[in-house]
Length: 167
Image (cartoon, rainbow, N blue to C red; front, side, top):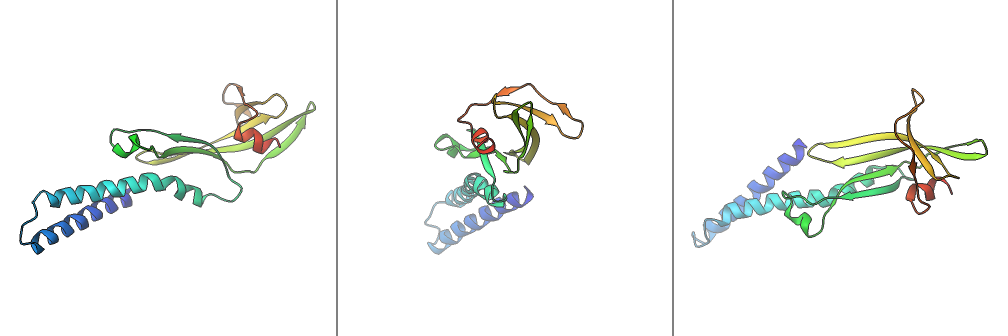
């Protein structure tokens, strides 16, 4: 977060300085407002670049075999470009490492889901789940204490986690 703030400030100073240099080269024929406008455009340009590049950068850091289950896109008043084409602000992945067990002639699959969120401070949340492939139901659980954390959810056959875990 601090490095991105540093990058925004550096880019603002560089483009504002370039506009100042152009103004002096033309012997002050260019308007004065060009300097702060160039600095602001540089800062907003970097923020837009980071906003759209975050998702691809995070995916490149994940290990092979990772499956993206869900993507979240949000519009924001402070990001005017998000009204034209919102960037991915959050996504949920499964690492592809499943533990399969048979219990009462039903196949149960245990797996971990990781939720990445890009707020002002990036967050990572992980949860463990048990998926019943026959009844297409899943429930979150605490593996250390062996207790359920939520209600049972239905999973459709077209869901990415069902396709990947119950093949």
